[in-house]
Length: 213
Image 1: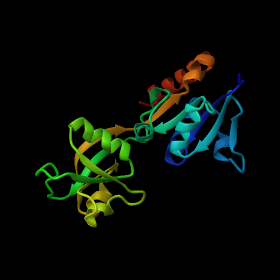
Image 2: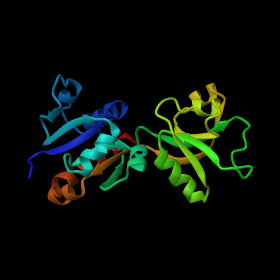
Image 3: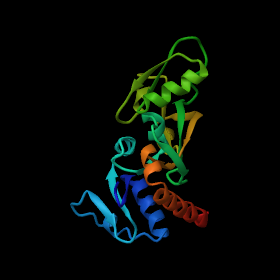
């Protein structure tokens, strides 16, 4: 058993918001803000070490027990599965998955199989399976908005925040697929091994979130 908990934080905006949350909880996050070449960052005034990772890797580290906790977007959880406990909706990083098409296009009209492009094929398939619709899902790694413009796809499923990129490319969201925000996740074995420490951390998070409402 470790004396200190490990948490994996998603790099980028979720990392910044996570640090703000931790500092509101009274944690000294200087090692995360000034990482240097270190890969594991020890919080000096709380038994917690932080690892910065890409979102899918946060899931991997927590699922395999390399980290006890993680902060990751619900979008990544929906796409990559969840063999762990999802214990807190942290509220920040809020956006949504949406189905978007060219303005004026009747996506649900007609009988032909629709083609849908997305960086999130798992989320897309699950959405249309619930509808009982047979669609062809095309995985795109880059700007998914290009797919309808090039007639590669009839629509896209993507993360939408303001909708400005869609509008600029003549696309409109026609249906919300899922709401998304940052979540605190916990390894299933760690929840048993470090229940007291994890509960303490969760309660500190919860109090700070409530204070910020």
